[in-house]
Length: 378
Image (cartoon, rainbow, N blue to C red; front, side):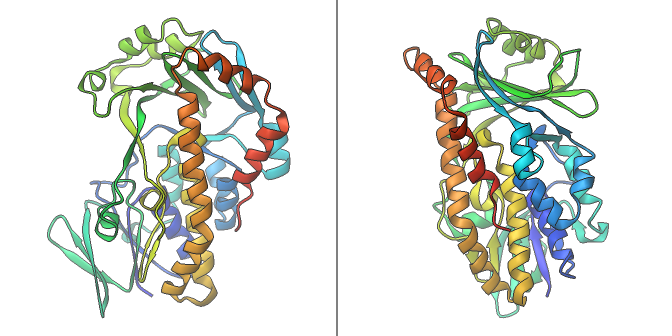
């Protein structure tokens, strides 16, 4: 069975490893000149760690990341709004609130894939199904034919656009800056977010004495003014927020700053199209508010390989995969978008009500939500 994978991100690489466990040797194509990630920190919740355990690489992943005690939400003055204790959830579901630099995760994944199966500088622009299989056309004018193709080239997937022309990224209403810096001495064992009228800021310690931070502002899409912002602009904008938020930006160099608008994908009703299957963000891109983007990509890889391994009938496995994944990924996408709207509220009347409600939210409500996220069907 000759399988091509379009996209060398977390979904594509993890799926390749899962297929290798079945004795297959998929070829992975990526548009970038090298298989190098662009990004900052990311969360791997218990469901993702369980997925890596199924693939036998969890220990390698965990060695490169950092486990935290919990997740806290503060108001702009530093008053606690809500807290999740990861230790209790970890005891029940396995490792929770684990963070890792995206580059480190990619290094681990790449270490489990033969280099000859990696094809960089190959942007797939179309896929044509014939009697011989699926022919991939690349931007450089070349093409290759496979029995089957897995599409994992992200939110802006050109191949998904051909299959589903109406499925285009939708703007979430806010833009985001991110950075990874050396820890200047801030002590924390947990991840946190601060919600205020001026926007939302989150930060978390990483391995190797690093800090990952992000800042989200409600804004028009593709704002040229905000695209030009530097760390000093963020420091000034959030100067009234509690310590160490202004200091995070003060310790960030312009070269360490990443900026992009936040988009997701409105839920689609099909992931399987005969001998083409969509995976990861190409199928169900979500906003980052639940920290589940990478986690759902890992789930996809494990579940698809599980279905394929039953009978090695790719088309049937694709349909079974779709049946197992549609409802769950739709729920994650919708919940994450709703959470983003709540967190990004700038209404002076609604913010105190929101904070009061979260501050008095019963513990079991938080735990019930996490139960649904972590209870994955492998």
